[in-house]
Image (cartoon, rainbow over all chains, first blue to last red; front, side, top):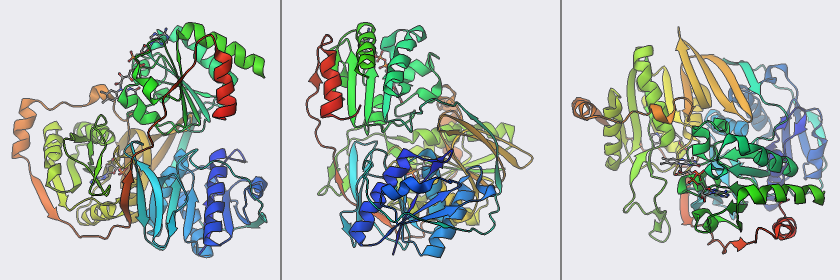
Length: 316
Length: 248
Ligand SMILES: Cc1cc2nc3c(=O)[nH]c(=O)nc-3n(C[C@H](O)[C@H](O)[C@H](O)COP(=O)(O)OP(=O)(O)OC[C@H]3O[C@@H](n4cnc5c(N)ncnc54)[C@H](O)[C@@H]3O)c2cc1C
Ligand SMILES: Nc1ncnc2c1ncn2[C@@H]1O[C@H](COP(=O)(O)O)[C@@H](O)[C@H]1O
């Protein structure tokens, strides 16, 4: 019986979502009364994991894992699970971890549960809470199986510092054959992405046209936020499709979601329900979005945004 | 080429979500069911491949007879054949294993699922199928091109696009981008008439045990009334975000 966390890294830096998974793993390990182990892949700076309660860090370094593919990474993690007799593996809900989780569950015949929002209420039967119906509901789910893989919903647990031994141990893996190869990656660098952002600044048709988006970008910049938009905005080509959030677009699970000139249609809300705090800026006091908001400003975006930018800049 | 498209039958997003029987069941009463949007993108792509890849397209759902209407719609959209594995879909693991059993009997070169369903939002079934069958797998798939038995796929990654190459068989998790919304096929009269002639086969289930069982459902806590801040009091908003919500 052991808890293992796969701590995902990018360019040698452990991702924030991974630290959240480690914080969760620590709480679960304490509940079970076991130690907490983590595994990192091609990351030479895993020391930070110690501050979140990790006792042992399995360090995998392997050239054939240079590019992420769910198949090769599943294969590597499967070897750790086997060697360490792991019964619970914790994953973050980053795009890659989500991708990997189900595939790995298939390979190991483990049981997998995603969108988990809390540590188990009960260990026997193993009962854990997760969100469903695009966050319009939650379920308390009983999980059986010798290997349980749990993927936690972003920003649902938070980061909790803790002390661990943090002992680093090289883990050697057997040959990994991959039948799928990555031939090209096109990535915008330096931009905060919706999936990884703590804060998302999103705007809709109320912004009138693409020429006004500098306001959204400036506000996002002072907040270190990602930018997003409603569906009609990307349909009209004002913004790239990758920014479209909602039922048919990307899900957002940030700590703060600022919606400017978005009416708050149910299909839009479906994608952003799991964001924690919502701020709505809209000149129509009847806009449905105010019902889903924590803080609201009834006002003209073209007046409010520049002022907000100035005030946030002065604050720093 | 043989293509299987896995179809999940889900409540329309505008549906009211209610629970019954002591909060142990989702209340289907008055709920309109639709083809899971991600599956519809995948189905449309499969229909295109009938021409480009000389493909034969089978749609499959694991569910009870209430899913037949959705399967008929898939036939009217252009699928050649529909299969329903007759049982109640309880969890991703048992659903995937039912599908895998079928895939072991009938060999498919390509299995298309949606990236995730909009009801239980697990995003599990395609990965599980790929893992059990030991097939290649690409999810969040936004383009797919198969030539001479080689598949070239693009996947949306955080902040960009990744291109992969692999052999068949392959499982993909489809999403918007694979085809666009404007490409979705609305069944016409001819399609609906033709669908009546097409086979809808009902197979008995292997009754595989579920491993993740929803015992109880909850609704989110009622949201507190929005706090309105006057446009000329933005300092107050910043203060609330900083000190009350602690998000900046
Ligand atoms: C099957 C289906 C799927 C869908 N999926 C999605 C989805 O994934 N994501 C999504 O976003 N939508 C989706 N939609 C569309 C959705 O129903 C709405 O049409 C859309 O979200 C509206 O976009 P909007 O709020 O930007 O525009 P509008 O509804 O036009 O709202 C603009 C808002 O801006 C406000 N405004 C105007 N001027 C100003 C100003 N100067 N200052 C401040 N505010 C101003 C207005 O009061 C209004 O509330 C879907 C629809 C369907 C049918
Ligand atoms: N009962 C089912 N029958 C057939 N396919 C399904 C079923 N449930 C899920 N799927 C497929 O798996 C995908 C992901 O579903 P989920 O794992 O529930 O998010 C869906 O988009 C479907 O393609």
